[in-house]
Length: 317
Length: 234
Ligand SMILES: Nc1ncnc2c1ncn2[C@@H]1O[C@H](COP(=O)(O)OP(=O)(O)OP(=O)(O)O)[C@@H](O)[C@H]1O
Ligand SMILES: [Mg+2]
Image 1 (cartoon, helix red, strand yellow):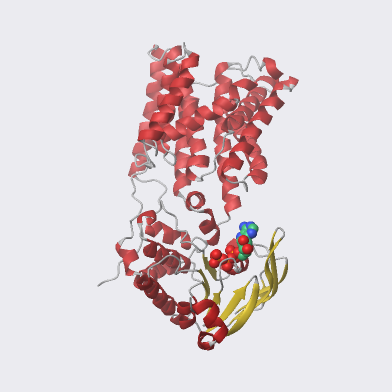
Image 2: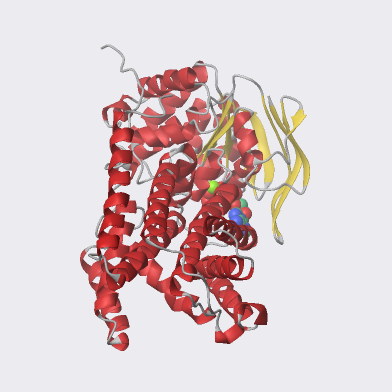
């Protein structure tokens, strides 16, 4: 197996170049704090949308609780960096792991539910997490968690976005990813093929939750302050809208969805009431004119140009 | 090869299989015939580990497999082609076949079996890259059977392959089932189309309300008065 080919090297050079350019732009002040704020927000939303897409778009599990995983990650990171002075990279990793563990715990009992039932169960899970956080004084309860050190910057955001996109794209293309897609396509047939559908559903949930936890960590350590209501039901819907907007089962779609809706929402910041209305209208128009999302189910060909090849020797006629 | 002994299956309070007995010898085509709701699909689903039996035995080459999980049943050489052409619509034909080989690791063997499937169903090779959801009903059924073969089964369980298909297509599919059997795969064929199934199979069981009502050589059942009345006429 060739781990690196020419393409990979070019990709890595491009990525390193982007990181360096970003740093230069930050240091000379072209990326000022306002632009940086938006870049971080876009990055966090890309991570959230791509990870939710794995659950909803690829595996076909209708989850309405993605913000809860983000919340778990955010609080984990806040506690670790503020109360225990732990290094940020460790906090990021732990946020992912704790969120992922929560994903597994909630996944095992609920993932045998189908469709609407699963949606309601995940909705309930999101509310439980929020209420638990509201009533836990150690993490600030309803007042919120203050004085979180600000570690998130351009570098962390960019690297985490790239890692999320690359790892989830690769997962989706692997045979494990195929198993997840086959569950979405037809669960009964998938079982009949000998695929352990429960295992793969929990796996998709765990991976999705892992990255949502990382997004939470980036969020907490950028904004100094978090409160349970930042990660409520509406945030879960927000993420879902990005995924649907971009296209269920399309990773580039999720990136474009996160990017465009974050920008729209920033532009509408001064009129928060209108924001939800415009969101609803956008969603309505998408469903009407392009129900498969902006990108349909387009897959990434940018990061890995290798076309899917089937090794079937065609027989001579 | 496969033996069901006094098999009982419940869905909650519904007693779907009531002490079922059935036996399949290596190399045979056995058909299981019955009306809607008789318990045919339940029988197949229980054999392949998708439903749990309450009591009784499922013996595969003498080994009890009642509580073996579904993925391991596939590895033991049982392949289940479910009712209603459950293909993966947004995957290509090729990808569907790949999924059929999911439990296998032997790349070379898998490649050989793609070609075997393509020999049985040349149309699938022509349409290799086409999305399975865009195939006609008959082609989807061919794909479902081809996909079932990709796990390299000793015993192929087919659930109503003729369902909703024109007679000419049914003929085509049944003649392929015959070919598959002649290549050494044992077949358990579930059908409502009693006439076709009895003509194809060596032996048959007639199931009614979760119980075997009649069994015997297929030719004999074809001429059996009761069978003619209930399943072949009208
Ligand atoms: N998931 C289920 N829950 C409850 N009852 C079920 C379930 N699946 C099947 N049954 C019941 O079990 C009985 C046998 O059903 P089964 O699907 O095995 O019949 P069948 O012979 O395959 O019929 P058909 O020819 O219509 O496919 C029926 O009475 C059916 O209503
Ligand atoms: Mg049936």
